[in-house]
Length: 229
Image (cartoon, rainbow, N blue to C red; front, side):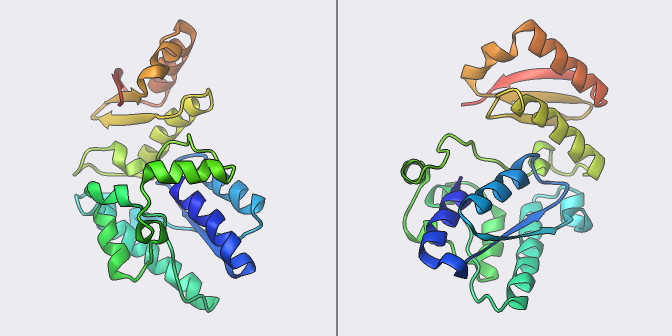
């Protein structure tokens, strides 16, 4: 949602002078690329899509505490290469004021590599971003997303197959209207996190039974349930 607001505001200010870049890979939450493509097309923004494989980075592959920093640094470096090839002098991202309250190693990479954060400079947090998104006709209810690596505990080996399994499980629920979905991997088991108001729909026998069967088909040995705030 942050990047969506930034894109629309920038499109109004720059018109054809704006280019959107999406770097996608095995860590990307299913559906995010399609959403980015749809938004760029809606507002007639030039949109470049490129592959990015963070599994080539040891810190990411081994899911170390510095995973996000290493990943973001490599991602931004690739984005700068794309920008330089088109003589684009500035990179923007959707970091906002509320992001500063969390532990986000990736923010350090943004600062080191000279990425500007207009929403942060404008002093906008999530509440203001949602309000401005509504004003611009954007979906202000869209939940925050984080890469699929965050579903695994630190110091666990990440593979393309493991990330895809989690992505498939979450995508099944999102395709049925669930919004704030997280499927956390705990060894051979997984823990499902949903918004409190969505549990009644999930616990309907037909939904829970089919999802449990999917989890088994994906190779997990069990499922536990937990609400999110």
